[in-house]
Image 1 (tube, rainbow, N blue to C red):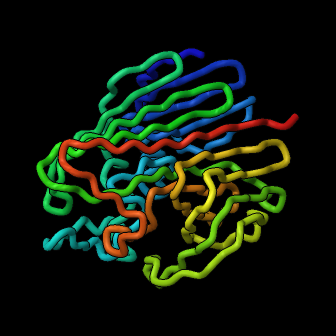
Image 2 (cartoon, rainbow, N blue to C red):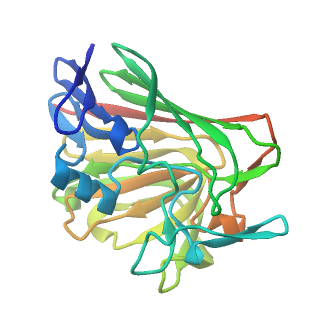
Length: 293
């Protein structure tokens, strides 16, 4: 595999091999904006142009979600005895959405022909006054990628946080695609897309064409399978993880979003992590892709 930096309109690292292409963009929050395996597109990205950047900021293709995935209701939360106000960057619903790093430019720490390591150092603000270092490592192979998160609390007080990843997987003709995962609970949302109730679930196995949702699930297993006529994708997550599914109206892709907590965890505390000063938290995701002749 080879890696080169392409200094185009939006610069990116391009990993290539026979039938394989992966583009990772530091200025778009260190996100993957193309993954091709076996000559077929697996992850849907955005054009690396000014229009593509606007699309990314709207749909957050493959965004790295930290220090919270999905939404915080009204952008407000309390930690300890103190209340905080995040930017309400989901203007139509008045929420904070997708964390703080997805709009930042990642600092490149190191690279090789099959890996890339980024770093984000938090600039403390009133909405999230907790100092952290977030290191993201991509490890690539001809059958997919591993995504490694490492969070270090650089401050002198405990910090609340959650993690997530927001890729869109190509799935045209969704009646021919199915998704499977082990779960026991689905979280339902109110009119502002904030979970406010739940229902017990059995393990999920259904066609994508039957999905009309933007809901989260508590996982009881560590694998999410996406099956199509020409591909089998397996996403492997840590035990105790959660999953968000979002099926866009175009029905040409599906957002399968592994998360360490559910939406609004800063308030409902479901899956929320607290990291003590000077300590490190690690969390990994692996995507395995098998193309079917």
